[in-house]
Image 1 (cartoon, rainbow, N blue to C red):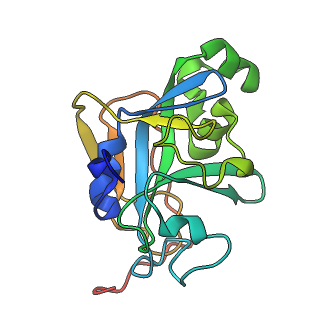
Image 2 (image 1 turned 30 degrees about the horizontal axis):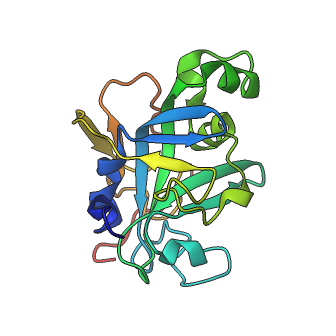
Amino acid sequence: MPGWPELLGPAEEVAPRLLGGVLRKDGVAVRITEVEAYAGDTDPGSHAYRGRTPRTEVMFGPPGRLYCYLSYGMHVCANVVVGEAGTAAAVLLRAGEVVDGVDVARKRRPGVADRQLARGPGLLCRALAISLDDDGSDVADHGSGPVTLDLPNEAVEISRGPRTGLRLAPDRVWRFWITGDPSVSGHRRHPAAVRETPGL
């Protein structure tokens, strides 16, 4: 994708590059503070582990598209597709800080503290009013759709750790967050987590 080399490369390398970037939709802007990387057929934790399906087609590129899915039948979660077209890779947007349109986000998430408005992948999408209809949107092209992404323009201090809530491949340290940011959702280990076999 011309002008967006930051999105090219393995998901675990691209993911921290999105921290501090700003996602916008419908009058709300969220600064991304926490992300997780997901690969394709080498990552048992990925939706694309077993190959292309109608659900995962967007994950195979091109980069810069939004991959949206429904979690537990209730919460929409959003990922930015990364890497070379044809190879499944995406970065889950886990949490963020609302930096514009706070009043609008408060109406969408009434009764919570500002630091919790987008604290968690489903809540981030709720604050931005991202729905399954946004699946496939080109967030890198600011003229083509309702959801846009501005890459970060300043360095941030980054921490990393294992991904959260996964039963398979839970120990890959592919979760990245802005160190000390209060909007970060934190780690939760799946009660039935299976330790990954070395070499997978």
